[in-house]
Image (cartoon, rainbow, N blue to C red; front, side, top):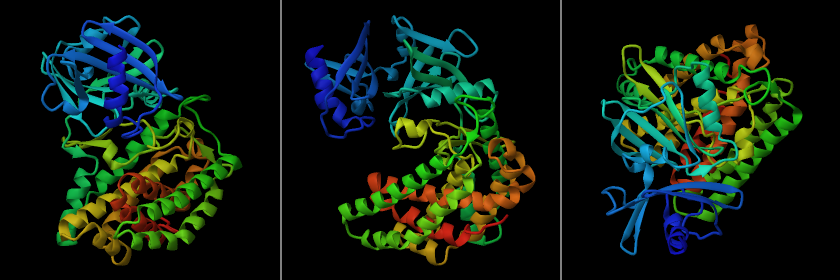
Length: 467
């Protein structure tokens, strides 16, 4: 194992899509290793971060999986979930358990292939002998508390209809290592119908309305919050928002804002100087939003999705039309403590509002043929999608406001929810935009113009907004 593990930590992990420290070698300690047949389960840690890596010995690396495997001394290994025999093999390993939700057996898996490589986890599509399709999301980073697994269990118990059907949870000892669910056949992500509608609107300025679908989205989000917060105490319950909570939220915004400015200074590449200046000029917008968070003193915080946007959804194009939410791991970049924290339910709604801004930006680029920089400037000066977006956002927010039990989940009397929703949402819209600036500055710096433009959009459209 010595030479193999040396190769894994020295060569394989630094280039892995899911490894936090790109092209860097860090100290790694093996916590556990289990062999069964040609499968090796590795559990290791670096500091307080635990990792799970199943490897399968194969004669040759399968085509298309070169980035998810390696060869050493004429022996090849691939991340084992991509083998059709994986579920059968791990069920034989001591310490592994499969907690089935309904049935206690799986159909025979005959085909396996990656569903996506754009994930920090292994996501595999399995085809069963009976023609059914399943998806295994196998976690590479094992958190102290697996928030997604807990949420999916809770939502399944509450019969929440807008998640994939859960088949089983995979565990090794007391750690949840994967979730097996029914594959959802979708036409695209959650933005698909709205993107097409906006393109139609930009061409006609009349057609292109999906207000009913936006209203349905509000009901789906309301249902999510109600299902996640049915307990009277504990992980799935509402709690009073305190002054220390507000101080922490304000501090996080300030940290992300200053961190974004610093990051843009470090990058110092052509084209970003203008947007760095625009971010600096937005300081008053950010500070104003921070001061407005004081409205939450004495209200309630709850269990929320935390990273809710159209890209986290699958659009199902059937007669009824539907949205399925597929990711509950929390906001990227947060510590486990921050992911475990509760926040007002309005934050999820604000994140969805910001998602419509990203969608509008992409649609205008496609329709006009202009560059990203040009469209970002246009959206500050004379946004052609403002009316369309505001109408759809209002439809979503209004249906949410009418459906949610705001007195129990937010601390706002139900008869005041509609009139209060604008000022409750605004600071979180800014907070989410600041997070997006920070995220883009770290991972996609050429995209920072979109959320920076979003800061100005929010100040112009949503400050003092009343439905």
